[in-house]
Length: 305
Image 1 (cartoon, rainbow, N blue to C red):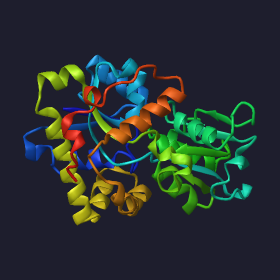
Image 2 (image 1 turned 90 degrees about the vertical axis):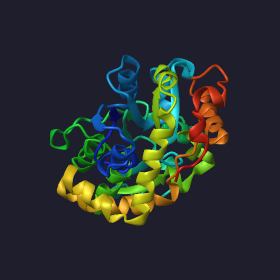
Image 3 (image 1 turned 60 degrees about the vertical axis):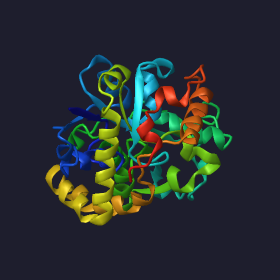
């Protein structure tokens, strides 16, 4: 089983990574591997074409490849809430929560990830075009490989952008190196309910779910087991990082996972789904009112962690 993630050296999709690395899938009789497919919309396109079996990414981005949610099913959550950070150059002195300070700045964000920032700005009464906030791709940094968060940090460090909207690993690196300050932590600050815009999920094609009725329960169980193992011993995250991450990032991942543990759950509630769809409608990406049961697998309605 191939599981696509859009960013590897990150805490965002670590539950899926841990479920593979800690043998949680193997314990259920499934051989699974993680493959990096960036950005999120490309990961869902790979799911649609059959290149991968599961996508472990932001749930809202599924509609990039499956219009109006048709043909895709959400198997479970990896954790609750929108999980990205807005970080800006530390020398700008912008206070946490002061989104008005972004006027005139260049903010790097990945495709489909950027929608969360645009939505948060909208909730704060800001308009990127009117207010001169340039939100666009982050210049690729060769030393970061294919990992978006590391590219974001390096681009900020080099002054190629004024800020970024990216994962917790990128934010931690920027703060520790003194090049950036956190202006918004979507999950914890939650201005005007923006944490409900999306969440990291596990998704499969509808045809796969229909052909394998046990798939959703198996995936939810594997991710739930990974949650339980990390709660029991967060040091396991450091061991996984030592095998797969660069040395500095490997040393940081345990602390990031410990901080994320309160949000670990495999459950997707009707409220989660409705909030995400309301966000997609505001962005002009959803017309219909999809039924919860037609998109979210029954196993996702019950928490496994």
